[in-house]
Image 1 (cartoon, one colour):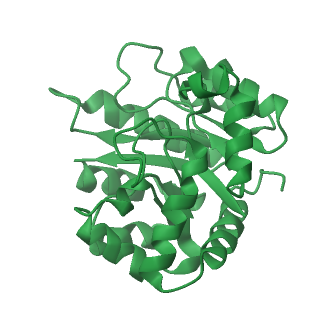
Image 2 (spheres, rainbow, N blue to C red):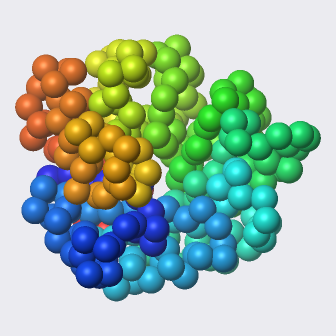
Length: 259
């Protein structure tokens, strides 16, 4: 059994399934993927994230605004709390910092991140952290705001082992996406080998970042199996062990998720 701990079901390419989400879910189920966390990136499409979770017992949702979203509504912690009150919302995010795609004075990103951390602590729902080209500021703010009080996950982790250890010390899990299957991801593969098994998750981030052998094509939740297979190969264990451990970790972290 596998859990896709981070996907964007509202943004999937459903053309192969006659436009029906159920087709993508069935394909994932065939590959042993049993549960899905549909992650929010802006409030304008929050209903599109939440509705699949309301309709399917095995789909959960988050609420948050991605650090690169600079045109939509920027919520306060109180607004996030209201939306997070729904029983199918199990996480706050994705949030964090991204200096790769944004330029200029990015204090607004850091302010937004702090609002999300505050909402996480007040709701007692874990954070989903996006961190790109902003390692020091991200980890500093997490420490300053005591984000580890509730904890969460460093989604689509791409950093080295030293950075992974710093995140682990802050009470955060590490999630591996299809990037770990890329030949160029040498340091990340080392992280996957060294990671304490009780702090590891797998994800697709679909429809983005498809793993080998689908790199460059639209990603889908079924492909999380390829991420897990690669991690199993790196660690010298069976796929079933990676599936069992990462599924248990998911439900340990997201305690509001009903199994």
